Amino acid sequence: MKYREINKELHKHTWWSEEAPAVPLNSVWVRQYVQQQKYWHPRLPSMIVCFFKNEFVFEETPEDEKLEIWHYLWEKHQKNPGFMKKRYRQWQVISRRVKLLGEQFTAGKKTWSNRQLAASLLNLSEQVKDHWRMTWMMECADIFTTYELPKLLRKELLRLSPEKINELAISLTSPDHLSFMEHYRLEFIGLACGWHEAIRRGTDWKELPLVFQKRLEKMAERFVWISSNYRQGRSVTKQDIWKQLKEEISHKSPAELARQLASLKSKVQRTQRIKADCYRRYRLSRRLTNALKLLTFWASWIDQRKELALHVNWYLDAYAVEAGQRLGKPLWQMRHLVTDELGLLLRTGRMVPVPVLRQRRKFCTFVSTNIRGKVTETIYYKQQAQKIWRGIFWGRFWQRTKAEKRARIYAI
Image 1 (tube, helix red, strand yellow):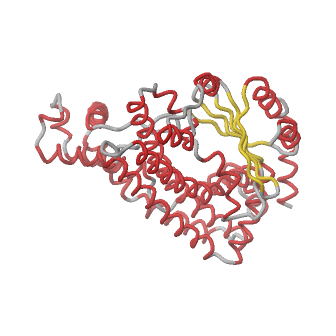
Image 2 (tube, rainbow, N blue to C red):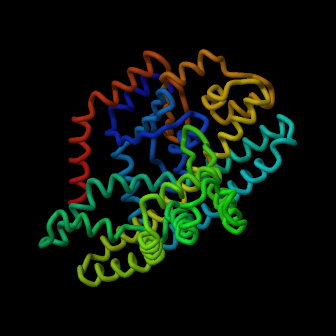
Image 3 (cartoon, helix red, strand yellow):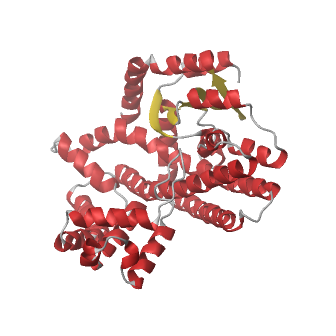
């Protein structure tokens, strides 16, 4: 899409901002944002803008469209609750495929040719794209919970204070399962509790009994991806976990750790009990209850989505490392290619010019659009990238006011 057309589209919307450490290679999700129509709203969203600056991304998505997507899915869920669960089961199949392809790459990469490596990367990339097309829609919950949910709760719970309403909203939308970070923490505290004295006295994990070493090794293998992000795929090692264990027991007694472990183990039952009590105490309308239960379902799914994203980041960064070593290219250059470009480089040796990659690293703007079924992605540099940045951020106050007015109209 031409820059002038992009500029016109920018002024049609209000913008929701997210930011994170990121490089283009790990940001497979950019184009997929406007392709979620395959599974959800038939014509929205139309646009996403991502500014990459010094290995950091500023993601901008249209608030008005996300709010419309929320209402569309909310209504659909009320008519057919099984529709969302069917999509979730489809996503679970995609998730398993992604992990299987990642494991195959990890096991076979040293014996594969460049072409085989490229084919593996593109195969993984296609599954990851489908994963994002199916899970992007849950981001619209941010708009609803920020602008509308507090108003709807206040309308039905007139006697409660704003603080109590906020507390109630958090309780009723919290996930019914432990997060992947809590699973990590559960295993970690279990190790710290069971081997507290031995860890405290030891100077190296290799000094401890073989049983402990095997548990530490399994934990490192299971959670090797957990420190990754959209900038790099950092591997967690046995030594990393050992240092964390030493730090943990240096300021916590066995009794404190045992209490934390018991609290984590009972968290799901405790959460379910609190929710049941809240629903009994406050007679919420069927429509609002439906929204809260949908948000709860999404909360668990979002956590699983984040876990898979960390796996993907770890795999993609490993592809970048492998490609850089084979082709004699710096790792930062591999990270500033998109997956299709890295696949092309492995297949043909054709490389994006280094000055372009330097500009991407310094500052660039990715814009993906889906206007009347036509999907485009354009990368802008220098002055045009700066103009798009100013077009979004200079009108922030006016846009926020406009978004709040729109949310009030929906809530009435």
